[in-house]
Image 1 (cartoon, rainbow, N blue to C red):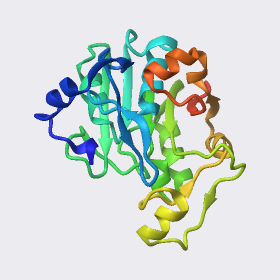
Image 2 (cartoon, rainbow, N blue to C red):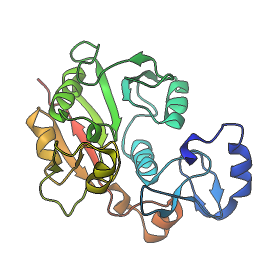
Image 3 (cartoon, rainbow, N blue to C red):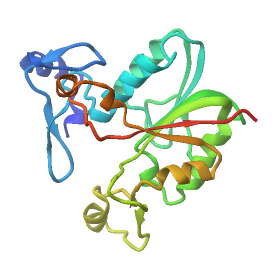
Image 4 (cartoon, rainbow, N blue to C red):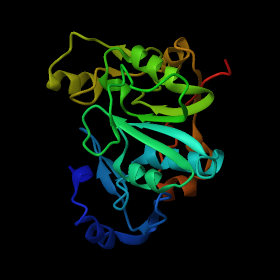
Length: 242
């Protein structure tokens, strides 16, 4: 898989795809094309050769950079199952007290089960958790844990695979084989497709939840240049003042 390309090979790939048609806002590099990516049907120009970012990662980066104080304020940040390039960049930021956590990854700071996080109540200003909840049967328990460890007035981004055409989330726990999960949920290790009621699930544990179509702030030419998905939702959560 391209996501697992050796760090030694990446500079050669970046050089090979160098051009002017697409720009990755994360590293500022421009390319003649991005790589195709996807389970089943491949999306063209989806994966940046340099950062290995996908559409959702580039959208999140632009939101963090332009709409928040993430790059300037002193913030205590928890990043669940961190994307490798984000982890590397965020750890270098002097303004962040940054903690990465995952149950299996060997590169994180803390080995942690999202269903029972080893952190105190009201610990983090910002929580980032992308494409994790679709793997977990008891997703509301995981949401509750993220809510518990977030500070009042804290905020976060909790992305999941969504189908905006679905009013209600599609899940069936009798579907257990990788082949059948691929067929029903889009990936062999997913247990659901989230629908638009995802935000009600987040609200049920206490979060304020916003469905932000952030890519739509950009012009059509910018959407093409950054290779964004115009209709992708950026789920933003906030913990009310207690």
